[in-house]
Image 1 (cartoon, helix red, strand yellow):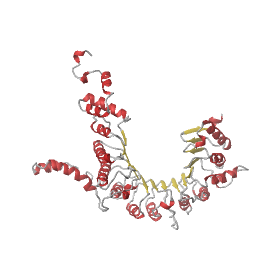
Image 2 (cartoon, helix red, strand yellow):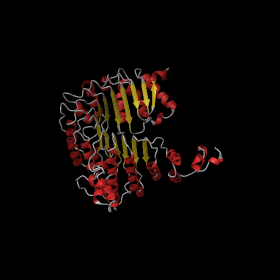
Image 3 (tube, rainbow, N blue to C red):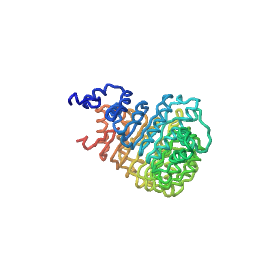
Image 4 (tube, rainbow, N blue to C red):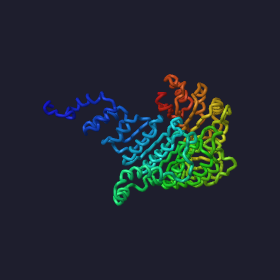
Length: 506
């Protein structure tokens, strides 16, 4: 390009502009992006690349710097986001400004198919000067905005407990109308103060009357409330109303019961009837002494939802409660402690459609060990009660007693033909073993003979790689031993590695 043609900086070649822009810091790039259209696209692209925001269709903000939020708000070329994932900053000074930016950003989106929000774990961020009150208002406002944007998948996690802070009033009336309409109307009416009344009414009439004033009916199908904050004021009213409003469309619902009172669960579960619910997850602390929810409340909820196909239930023991003969007739996947599984299966009409079962051990305070013989009580029932069962998962979350139980069953096949409850599980083709502790050498030595007890097994899965098999020679020797001990086994998955045993031997 001749020099006589270059009259302005944006007229330079792209290569030269890149050399000029690259050394600038992000704040300077954002200022530069507002000077003209060419620098807007060039400068903000550099900002997003540095932040590793490869695609703006999925916006992932995990403790992001403040300038990145400003860049997203002013960007003219951001694609319509389909996913919005937020992890708020723990810095006290950033809490309120950041959530305000989240609200503005969500308002600019045409639609948000998936939304995930991770509550801050830090408790020192909130003091007794009203920060928590204002922050919760803004967060509920954000949730409402997202649900109004055709949200299909809603996920909130984090262990922040409002009881630790200067919590606002525990008034049970819905706070939504005052949370969202008040800032908008106050700001606009203040600017229109000097206008005639007719002009005020005309302008205020275009403000959406349901801008957070009530629950949003949407296409919400997946609702995962895994933070105790959602079950405490003022979020509890929002959670209840949202579930009730979207009751006809919800397919999956997940709750986490940590730190929540039994009365709260009783009130919430009694108000919910979800006719299309197919997957329900109710998990709590693995420590049995910390569980608060009543089994009667769980049973009443399950009785009202025969459509449930997948159930992940980690709660109190059923006690003397009788299992209804027609409970969960469509159940295909079950994850639960052994006592609950026995209660559910040992009846006149058990779960004939059950295809996948995960037996989960419980954890007790102190040195009390879990009784793994209760696993056997489940295994004995499976051949007669679950004719369609093909996948079995054993989760050993309590370390003491694990090796002894595995070795007890493995020893039955070392001499003579396999015997015991495992040998009767001829329909099991996939076995998944999960241990929370590091795998010890004794455990990996028992596994090949334990697996050999399943006569029809074809696939073995270890979600985590044992520490003593981290080196390739040790892992290869372990896999070869399994292949020799279990000739019918086809594949073994360790961590993210899938091994074909026929290929390994050849």
